[in-house]
Length: 322
Image (cartoon, rainbow, N blue to C red; front, side, top):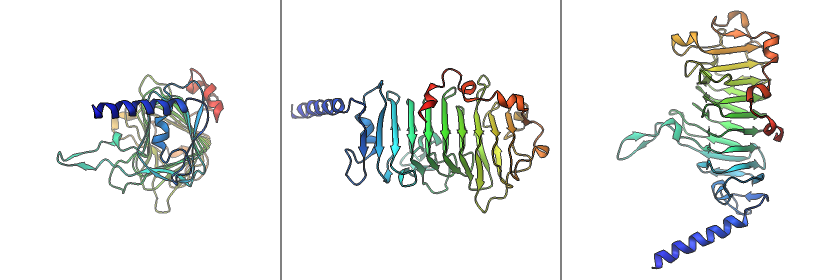
């Protein structure tokens, strides 16, 4: 009987707490205890399912070591940091973690620090980090939702830093910094990167798109700057994780460490199907004459057709938030 009463009381007070936050007011998270919650996960727990208003979770400067999931039943939430470089959500799972007594390892898709399952979510002024040692795949950001905005954020990791999951989902990265080693931007979603800095930490591959055959666009890097660690001498723009991977770099600054051939096929037969394009890039690494024959330089007319509205198709009104 006592156990039943405890459960009923817990449910009652949880309901009261949820109702008290059922409004568009901002929730404050602070690791030092000066906010309403000490963790991001706690703040997400009190948000109402399928909210029809915009709610901000304001996160004060600090390091939050937690594995965060924004579940599918939430929407219209913005995680806003006080300071991009000093508001850090971090965790350290990687694919070579072994679970006793089974001896089985963690798959890439469970290594995330932040997983966004929901639609209509915004991240602003935050650092999302997977700080695992360089022991295998270790995802910082894992997305599954549609209409996602990432503004002035940093995504830090090594192999597989950003996983853009779920075909036909759409996301915009604006003024963001993304770093990694191998295939550190990968997946099947449609993602536009505008004015972002993309930083390679090892001789390897920046992207590994797995765009489905029936999806017109995969990754588009527009007005971005590619940089590399001092030790890097050979960096590919991408390789197709699946046959029809789509990646375009246009109006971007490419450093001299970009391989003259630009792209790698991953598997030989993908040279027949991969969709790899460039347009009007600049810098020592922009070298159209030496690119692989199965990539293509767009014409000016073709490039003018690549717009946010066309790429995201159904609606672009959610882009106005940035």
